[in-house]
Length: 337
Image 1 (tube, helix red, strand yellow):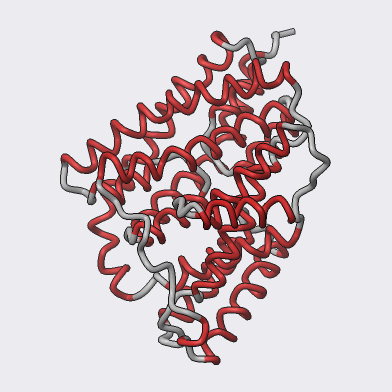
Image 2 (spheres, rainbow, N blue to C red; image 1 turned 45 degrees about the vertical axis):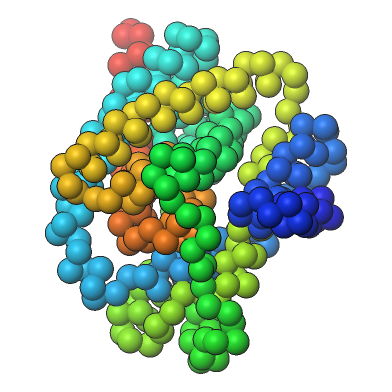
């Protein structure tokens, strides 16, 4: 906590972008690489993600449903995006970096970080390698995406992230808190993947569509979410060894650039066909974490509905499809007796 607060204050004092995200992320990453004894915040970090679920849910309005048909064409590109990632990524990890088949498969899949680690471990992949590869993917994309947005798309990272808590009616704040807690814990109970985000998202969307809430979570809450997400990314690298840096982390960094080329092609395609604005298209196909892309969508003023709909589609397809495809591959690779 002390390191994260220090990093935030340094970024704030130097007027660097997104101090509440990049400050703690940078400080914790440097400390992790220096083998400082750190742990994540556990359930506190998970609870912070509920804030982003509420933020996305609050943006789901009747007007968004009217826009869904316009999104359909670009959403249909998501399965093709995933297939191409698999066709490129699996051989990349197997032949270039020498990982075993199962680790290569789950390292290549652009699903949720925790989901891919759990599924991979159950299938016999190396969970430590998966953790570092996916952690590296999220770290690099979160670091580079704002630079790309600013340089190539002229995006400002100064969009108001929310009204102060004092400006939001008390009953709406209470409803948001209830939606976050009930959605999170209710989602966990029914086995909803990504329950800390999707549960609050669904609960808040119902309140938004029912005309009970009319604003996103307050600015202070969004900053808290950024802080704990930044910490979580940095702490992911605690205990990394020089050998892991040379092989596993290096493989993750190299793979990010492979993903970036594919994402850039789909961004250009969506933009060229007039299926979405450049910033929204970029964020929709950037293979980063759902929570991290939500933060960037908020600070750039992008259409949250467009961005998150595409990420949810990607994650759902990967979570449902990855174990099935992995099982089919394993079945074919077993020797016939």
